[in-house]
Length: 121
Image (cartoon, one colour):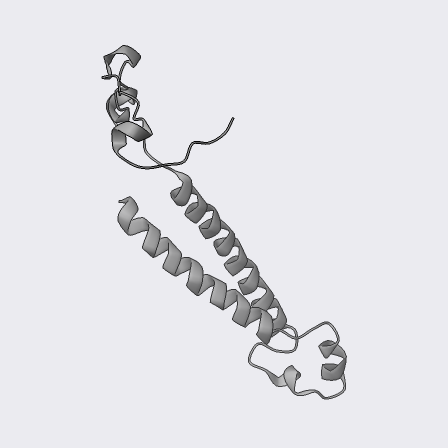
């Protein structure tokens, strides 16, 4: 279920985010109402003089709430890791005991057959 839910939620998140961006860019600022009072073209719109502002602001608020909840859902899915069944010690590699390793003989320069200079002490 998790494998199918993440891409679906991510796609919804992107579409809602683009919708919020578009609606915010379409809306008029507070100063645009004064121009409409003196014969601006927005008073004859489909929703009336103030109807479009209410519709756009409510739609933006709804999309912003959906964006918020999809953000929470995506963060939960990204951080939630189900606990694996089994022992905690399954992934641990056993360490060798200190006395069980075979001793390694030190290699001297003469035994190796190389001609190295002695380092003064």
